[in-house]
Length: 428
Ligand SMILES: [Mg+2]
Image (cartoon, rainbow, N blue to C red; front, side, top):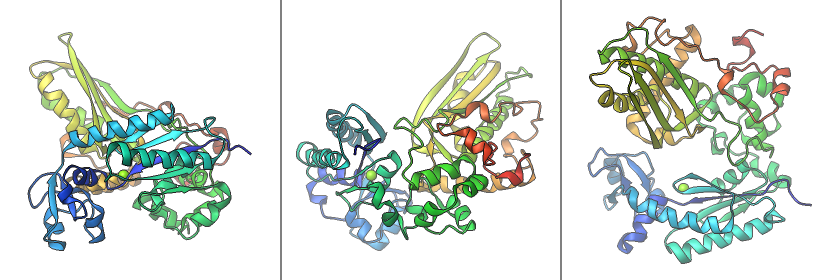
């Protein structure tokens, strides 16, 4: 019998560090860390498998890595080098399937539905790509791969595959594969969500799979349905992620016209906070930022920026906005402002890898908790202070911007009400 869908996911192992070892053969087999800069407090953004074996992991500071292994090789991050290897790797994948979704600099999904007849046949393509990367791009690079009937399971299979190998995850083996596995092993389950699931009495992925879906939806809304569907091998999004909103943003026409950019700054902070709140309430992260503004003089400006680092907290959104806005708007009278985030994805653990952002994430979580409990705008950032509610009021409805690729009627019947907070927090 043919499967409804066949998805292959490939993920390069210790990618940045392996590319560096490929470039310099003397570093192969050695503990190596790719750092954001060549100073002791810099963050390690990737480490080689030899470094990982010594407990030196992504997110550590250079100085802590050197404490664990004084012989640790430190290399400064070199994005151009990684991009050039990525281009060659993705070119090979593109020869194997037209349905390719490049997910990050070192990861891609290939939808092989209709192209092959079975998961085993897809595995043959996966092995061929693994071998071609070795033969045609770089002998030091390896990729883990997963083949499964859904996109989520394919990524889960490659995440849990031994490095450089391929795992085929069939529906009939799913229960045994998930049994006893930690919740955070799953793609999209970070610590915060893990806590909420544990509060429901769910401690492993096997338990999540068997949990009554109606209870999950009642407690976690659409996210509960997605989680349950993911571990049960039910596709909730296509390779283009139709299950998620495409973008989240806010705009505002300024009532007060002034050349004083301090006023615009406060409105931008408010728009950034609104956007950040909505993003986090949906457990998403953004990888693209955009801003536009118009001026009373009849001009305007703006910009769009892709971000390899996940955008999650409001301060980062504001900083991106201000960096784009301030130089362009100087000397003019802004009349309308809009900002937003695109390339949305389920929240990963990646955002916590940059130490300077970790504090911002903790801060955002604390502010969210207070505002959830006591009402919107109970606690605001200093930059917003003194801005009355008539400026940038929250007038964009929640559901208008969200379209789900899942049976929403069914969810509504089961108590889903557009809020993640469950029926106790929202009117019936
Ligand atoms: Mg990788």
